[in-house]
Length: 295
Image (cartoon, rainbow, N blue to C red; front, side):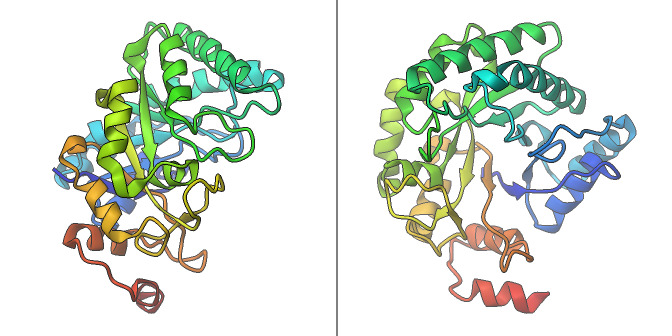
């Protein structure tokens, strides 16, 4: 079954209900959101009434709540020793918020080692995750998904071996998994036109059963560029046909696929139209003009 959606908003007035309504507008059957601005710690209390309304609306529109994704804030960086205590505390709080919402999966950027080196960065991530999982052990139902990164700057997680080392070091492996990102993988040096070969490598190192989300993005950059610049579906270097083959690969069937492609002219969300292309398996070279003219 194709489980396809996109990033959507989440605001203090409508919360999860607003997120669901936006996803429905895009004709999606899943979605991903932040519980607040990804760049700061400002958060509103979760309102159970809005969550209940959202759950009912999801049932009415055939959205499987178990496939919905939360993304952790960017400001969490377990690698950075200066921000380590803050990151542990804030990630603990975010997991508690996600538990209140009832969402099962949270995507987390592993972090940037900011000069400490990969090995020390990995050690800090492992230490931080073990502390967080200990903090929430009595109530936690959330699985944290380490996102594969492009390798920009001092990012950790651009190589599968680095993701494996983190998972190996986490004590509670029932609450750790992986989120693939096609743009990041391309920019990190993995060939997205040979996705089955990539899955074979992933399976031998980590296990395909650890993949619980896939960010579907084209890339503005050539393979191994380490730049992390997303492009609209079919308009980048990965290409529409390769992305369709990834999305419909039977080995990752029923895993949520989430679009994080850029707004057209930084104003118009492309998701409704990109999801339509994906469902039809037909590229529309006039997509950008179509989106602008529909507004």
